[in-house]
Length: 149
View 1: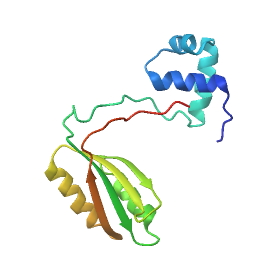
View 2: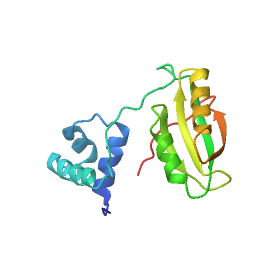
View 3: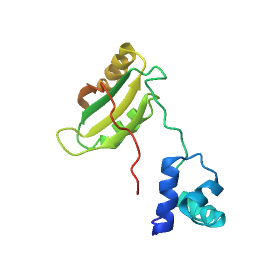
View 4: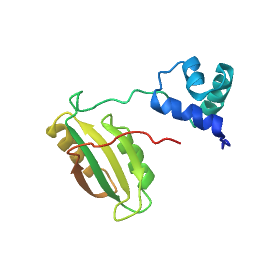
C-alpha cells in the first residue's frame, strides 16, 4: 500500500527517528501538532508498513559480538531467493541484500567468536547453489544511524 506523505508525516517520522520511545504527547510537542493527529498518522504509517516496528539500536560490541562481518555471496542462476531465505533464517544474520556487481547477495552478520563466524561461513558455503563467498570483518563503525526523511 503506497502512502502519500506530507510535511506532518515527515515531522512525526523524524521525531521517531531521533527517539522511538517518545510518548504520543512528546511526539506531538516536538512536531508541533496535536496528539490525536500523531495517533491517526502513526496508525496510517503502521498500516502501510512505512513504520514497520519500534526497536532499540543496540551496541553489539558491548553485547560481546566482537566479530561483525560483511559477507558477499555468489549464487548459481535462478536460485537467489532460495539461498537468501535460507541465509536469512540464521540468528546471527541482521541483514540480507540483493545487490548488483560481481556478487549477488550481501549478508551482514554479527558473531561472538571467530569460531562461530567460521562455522557459519562453512555452513553457507556448503549450501546448494552457493558458488563462493568473500568475507570482510568490520574493524570500526564510524556511523550506524537512520537517515532523516
